Image (cartoon, rainbow over all chains, first blue to last red; front, top):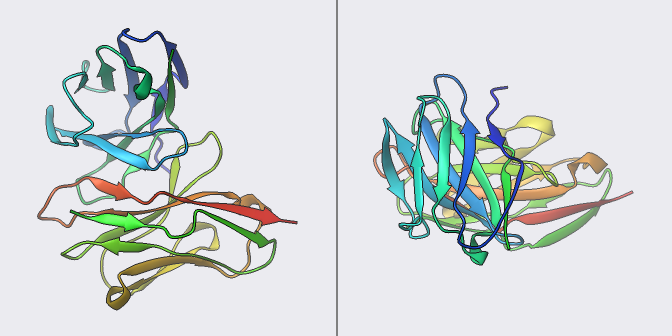
Length: 113
Length: 115
């Protein structure tokens, strides 16, 4: 089965620091997504991305967040100035097209101290 | 906007017993429905999905789900649970082809399997 990978598996940072979470998508799967899951809560959609543009974003995805494909392969989520409430599991997902199955990575656990 | 409700936060079943996890959705058009499983420390793995056609959908690991439009439900079932099925299960609804493409997840149901 196709596999999405994410690095790091766990990131610990100080409040106010910038973090970059990385995702290696499945080859030829051109639709990208980020979700987060705060401990004990439901998985929440953050953003979808296609053709080097954000397709859609939720109200969670404010100016502190940004996404890009810096080298045309990896897909990153940047949080400019982390807050305590950004502590969560962040999942990258990837699909071949926007109606196709989304394959999820194993997640990056972000801890903001 | 679409939404998903999973009424059961936690379910405990004995190994070998049957299982049904409930999912109710709210969406104005034809929904795309999914069940994902999340084992501890792991990402989400797709069990099955429904877009159209036969309302009884077969998935991996012996799971199936039935789409009932009249009840706005998409319950997940398994005839005989194995200890390895203990995990968190998420129902999700996605938009149709002509709207946006984000997904909404339910809060999850944690399954505990007793020996």
